[in-house]
Image (cartoon, rainbow, N blue to C red):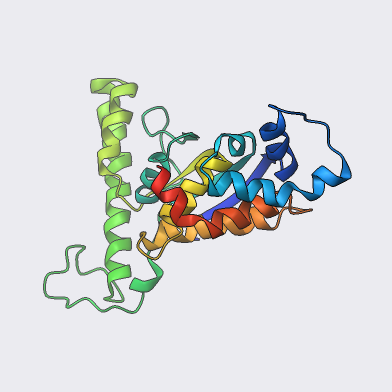
Amino acid sequence: MNNKNSVKLLGFYGSDEVIACSAWTSTSRDLTDEKKGRIPKLLEMLWKDGHHTPFEKGSVHFLVNSEIASHIHLLKHRISSANAESARYKELKDDKYYLPEDWLNLEESNENCLAGESISAYNWAGVLEEYTKQGNELYHRCLDELTPILGRKRAKESARFFKTYNSQIECDISFNMRSFANFQNLRNDEHAQKEIREIAQEMLELVENIDGNPFKHTLSMMKKYKQKMVEQY
C-alpha cells in the first residue's frame, strides 16, 4: 500500500493578466502592449498596499488524498471550497492510511506495545500500522453488525469512530489566489505540521509549473510580501 499523501492539480482559472484587468476595471480594461508591461508593477503595488480583492479573480483547483489531520487543516482556510469523502454517507472500503516516514526507524520499547505481539518489527511506524489495521477491522465489523439493528445510515455514521486520525480521505478543494496566499503563508511554513507543509509545498510547485506560468508575478508577490499577507488576515 502507498501510505503517502498526494496532490493533483485538476485545473485553474485566470492569470496575472486577468487579475490586472480586474484591478483596471475602475479605469479601463483595454490592454495595450504598454499596459501589459506594467502588470508586474501593478500587482506588486496592489499586494504591497493591501488591495487584495483582484487576486480573488484567479483560482486553483486540487484533488488531495491526505490523512484526516491534514484534511482538518485544509478546512480551516477562508474562501476555500472543499468536498471530501464522507464516512457518513458511504462505507470507506479502501482502508487507506498514512504512516509518518520519520517514524520508520524509531524503535518501540516492546514493554507496553498497545498493538499486541503480532508486530514483526517493533518500531513506531509498525505499531501505528497494526493499530490502524485493528481499527479498520473493527470499523467494518461494527458496520455489519449494527446495520440490522440501527439501520444503515446510523451504522455508517457511528462505526467511523473506529477510524484512526491517520485514515486517508480524498478531498476536492479550490482556492482563489488571495486565499491560496493565506494557505501558503500559514501551512508552507517551518512551524506548520510536517504533513500539511508537504501538501502546501506540492500545491505551490504544481501551480508554479503550469504551462506558460500564468501566475508568475502573483506567486512572486505572495513570496515577497508573505508577512504582509499574514498581517492582513
